[in-house]
Amino acid sequence: MSPHAAAVLSGLGAWLPPRVVDNFELSETLDTSDEWIRARTGIAERHVAEPGKSTVDMAVEAGRRALASAGAADVDFVLLATSTPDQPCPGSAPQVATALGLNGTAALDVNAVCSGFVYALATGAGLIAAGVASTVLVIGSDTFTTLVDPTDRGTVPIFGDGAGAVVLRAGHADEPGALGPFDLHSEGELAELLWVEAGGAKHRVSADKSDYFLAMQGTAVFRHACARMAESSRAVLAKAGWTVSDVDRFVGHQANVRILQAVAKTLGLPVDAVVSNIEKTGNTSAASIPLALADAVTGGSLVAGHRVLLSAFGAGLTWGSAVLRWPDVTPGA
Ligand code: ACO
Image (cartoon, rainbow, N blue to C red; front, side):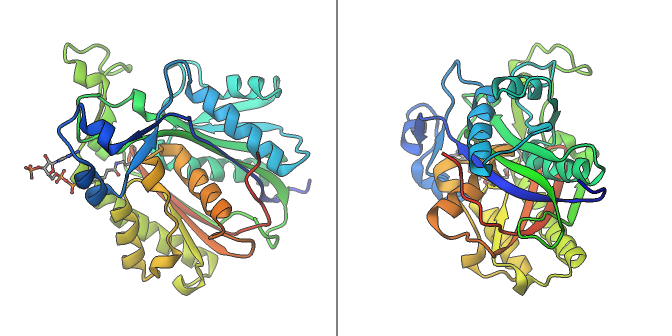
């Protein structure tokens, strides 16, 4: 491996827990409706990890499929993008590596919430460029249904569980699948817009049970997501020397179909460039982009040679984008 090698996407895997909860089922316990959820978010159903199935378990399923998709891959780093680790401490990536038969391999969690997958891709690309690793397994896995207050109609309908993964190998910047450039940002002063307030080192205990659940100021998050994803998409296209008309597929974080449509409209992207599987998954946080990629490849709407724009936005706040030309890679079984 030469120094400053590019990271090339060479494997793809996806996994969704089998239990599907549709909007009608949610309406049995929450003051909401299929009509409201579909109209405001584009979500019809989501997958939910049953008790006993965890973020690590899902990550292992997706990771195994990505490794199968890549063929022989001598992984020397595992990155797990998650903000719902199996325990608050330690990180979950070492447990994922061991379960995948990669005991002894370097393994690290990346917590950038819904931007986690794009951040982990950038981290993996950096490890490869620096010569620290030559093959990196990047997994996004989240179990947000464990983080939402089951009585909160503002968050429960939005989130689902799942995992997606890619394999990055050292290669050349002009190969199909070569990642980058990247555009990454954060704004910590807006952390309160979307957070779990209690249970950490600052606000250790709270008498209010709701402080242990995800609290979201939905309208403000919506506005920031639309603006930041569009800004960042423009920035990464400029760095890549691409124009909007060069983009064949826009694979954005699947938080709300209206956010994806608004970003596409701001950028001037045609509707058929927008990849969306949110109707069937809800917002799966760090898993959402690899799940959307896998769904699009399986459905035939993303094919080798397509120029792809990835863009994500999440709690933190964090956001970021990347581009690549889609390689001849299909999801592993
Ligand atoms: N069912 C029925 N009515 C509802 C529901 C529901 N599930 N939720 C809210 N409402 C009501 C509200 O009470 C409000 O009623 P009112 O007008 O009588 O006060 C009305 O619907 C409108 O509520 P808004 O919150 O203004 O609705 P909005 O159009 O903003 O949609 C939503 C809410 C879907 C949450 C939207 O704001 C959104 O998608 N925000 C972004 C969320 C997001 O992307 N979060 C994840 C970021 S990524 C990460 O890092 C995890």
